[in-house]
Length: 155
Ligand code: FES
Ligand code: FES
Image (cartoon, rainbow, N blue to C red):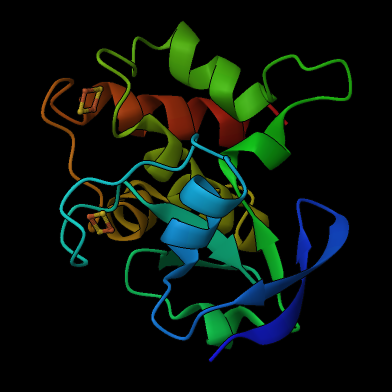
């Protein structure tokens, strides 16, 4: 049976009727058309679907949509500047060669963003912990860690 939820998504309040079996990932991609959040494994292993809920990075493929009610959610689309340009953290990924196929990148950036919001200049260990649940099959992680470090240092 459908239920109405209210969420703040990328700074905008939205209400929607949702089905209990939907995940947050399904709602974002299939109902709202926000396809920046990726589906990889679909069962909590790869991190491609990471979004920020009330300040914490979560796997949206495992997150029941009913639990999102009343929460603040940020997706990769919410990072763009007002003119639609790249967020400085996205730019740091590009500048450091941390993007190849790009499939892991939205999830990786949202995990990094949650960390950097809580800890503006994280250590390498903290960065590794924050992205431990995000798999990248292309870059080998070194450039991703460099990008996150460079963003932390640059502000
Ligand atoms: S798609 Fe959610 S963790 Fe892989
Ligand atoms: S850039 Fe291709 S999986 Fe990470």
